[in-house]
Image 1 (tube, rainbow, N blue to C red):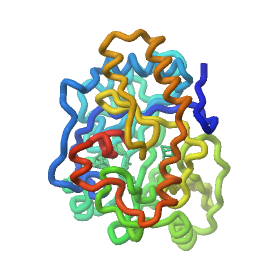
Image 2 (image 1 turned 90 degrees about the horizontal axis):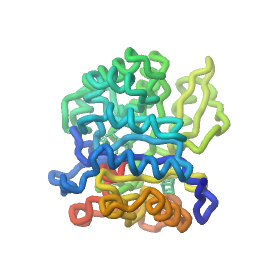
Image 3 (image 1 turned 60 degrees about the vertical axis):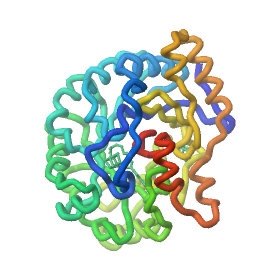
Amino acid sequence: MPSTDQHGRPLKSLRISVTDRCNLRCRYCMPEAHYTWLPRAEILDLEEIAQLARVFAGLGVDKLRLTGGEPLLRRGIPDLVRMLKEIPGIREVALTTNGILLAEAAPALRKAGLDRITVSLDTLDPQRFLALTQQDRLGSTLEGIRAAVDAGFPPPKLDTVLIRGTNEDEIEGLLQFAFDRGLELRFIEYMDVGGATQWDGSKVVPQREILQRVAERFGAVQALPKTDSAPADRFALPGGKVFGIIASTTQPFCGGCDRSRLTADGKWFLCLYAPEGLDLREPLRAGRTPEELRALISEGWSLRSDRGAEERKRARDRGPLAGPDTLRKNPHLEMHTRGG
Ligand code: SAM
Ligand code: SF4
Ligand code: SF4
């Protein structure tokens, strides 16, 4: 039976972080030299993830997204996709990746039944990629995007975090890259989430500025009607080209948020900004029945009143959500732990 929260929002979408590890160190996500990793013994195995996903599906979740950290660092992702696709009620299983390992993984993921892939791509300049991610791997990400198309996936979406002084001069170039390949790119406003210890309001490139720049280069921008609760606002350009903007920082969309997040060690977070999550690993490993887990999750969701991004927007003296010391003590606050 579908479950709704304190604001009448249904529980429809679950982001599953399959690992907190990553092969990049994006400056806006993992800029520090040292991290506290989740203990291996606490990481859910693939069957445990599938067991929990079955319970969520019974409560109305129909869309799953595998994320991380970098999800393709985890072994057995095609097996997990296969298990998730077999769950009654699951309409879509998607993946968000930095693309580094995608060229090799794409055929097996397609065969396993993965529905969609989103690739993060913040620059087309190899030197800038190195400066931004601390790895000289732009070529691997571009190869990954090509491989996803070749493997027969629907055109992958591209996600670009824009940061003033870093890559906002690539708005036009990145869009052209996407248009030339028939891909839809979404610009993401830089968010003050856990992990973004270098966040500063002046580095956010707001939606209105992006729209202005795009219109100057590509012509009149027309807003498209929202078709679902997806976070991106979508826009059309002359000739039918489409792109998106995820304006989480300047125009939060908490009112329709049907998403929650499961970490690799089984903590369930009801909001990207929530200070705490509900531990599902302990009851799962203690042998609670699916019905008992379902009651736990259903009650948790029914009490949910989170509107994290809206509250952050109202905050005075807005700065990073947490400093490096706090994050090292509580890695669950990190974006790379709770899954972007
Ligand atoms: N490693 C994968 C990737 O980068 O696609 C999946 C996990 S990553 C945490 C998911 C998304 O979160 C990426 O698109 C990334 O750009 C975004 N992200 C991370 N930190 C962010 C921040 N401070 N502001 C906005 N988006 C951020
Ligand atoms: Fe970058 Fe994603 Fe890794 Fe964060 S988790 S450092 S966004 S690749
Ligand atoms: Fe949903 Fe929280 Fe993000 Fe708002 S801030 S859209 S409630 S996850």
